[in-house]
Amino acid sequence: MDAAMNSAIDPASTRRAGCSRRRFLTALCLAAIGRHAHAVTESSPLPARFDPARDAARDLQTALQMARATRRRVLAEVGGEWCTWCHIMDRFFTANPDLAKIRDANFIVLRINFSKENKNEAFLARWPKVAGYPHLFVLDANGRLLHSQDTSALEATKDYDPAAFRKFLVDWAPR
Figure 1 (cartoon, helix red, strand yellow):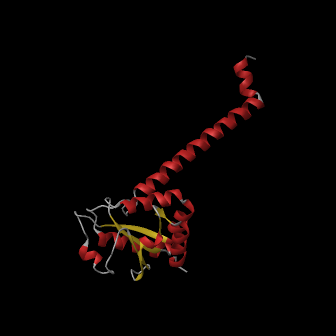
Figure 2 (tube, one colour):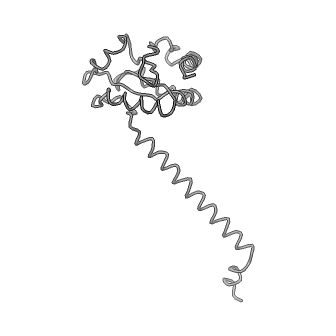
């Protein structure tokens, strides 16, 4: 028998080929899952950034639907792309994945734009006046305001205080 025919019958080469095939299929599945997970994030109906063109009332209704379906609360973050502390908060949650996990397990995050282009004054009039940005409102799944949080109370020098933010998230998580 020639070598090609021999390796096709040889059990050791068959195991190696099977293992190689399994690795390839595993890698292919992981790549597909990763791409799907990324697509789900990108196609979220809620804005990932503060967008003056968004309809805040429609976004709130979507967030409330999501909150009811997942038994979470809504964490409405009022701010803008111009807001330095809004970006610091984004970096804070990236740097503190344990806190991001607590936030995401308990809240639907809704970003509401406040900027020169769109102050969302009529929309924001339903809640207490905001003194600074970002500002957080905690809502139950029916849209009832539970808490208004001035984020300066969660700051620590030039960042946010992990212990203070953890306490806020745990205190206002659904029971």
